[in-house]
Amino acid sequence: MPLNDEKPLDLSVLIRRVVRGTPDQVFKAWTEAEHIQKWWGPAHISCPQCEMDLRVGGAYRIANLLPDGSTIWIIGRFLKIERPHLLSYSWQSGSSPEHGDKAQEQVTVRFVSHGDKTEVIVEHRHIADEKTQTSHTNGWTGCLDGIEAYCS
Image 1 (tube, rainbow, N blue to C red):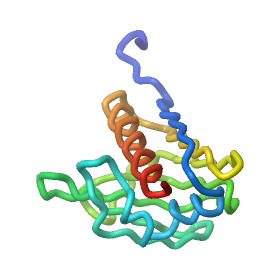
Image 2: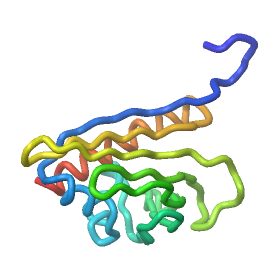
Image 3: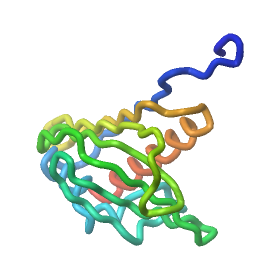
Image 4: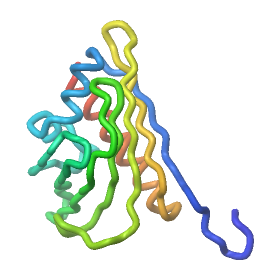
């Protein structure tokens, strides 16, 4: 616990999962909207809309439809793409498909070959607080559950 109620400067989440498929196949499932909509999110969240402009500087938008009918949007820009082994992008979430200028988190996803399987390593950095860190841990665990089932 930080002293004097100071907030940690850089909370993060690191989640790993081995899934069926080559890095190329899993990278494609992670970066193409028609695939993402089929596996994205924890079990209680669906993805009714997804847009991907997969190039450095390109934008993405992912809609997360919650059980109560509300939508949380995840938006950002691709920072680094090394197909099919690495993907890095900025991350913002909010109730609008176009957020304001708030601090951005960063996600890096690595796809490591293990024969006919791929280890997916998700690192989510620059998280503002422990509540959001817990939410991201649950969200990424659910996403990896989803892509694991989708790739089976």
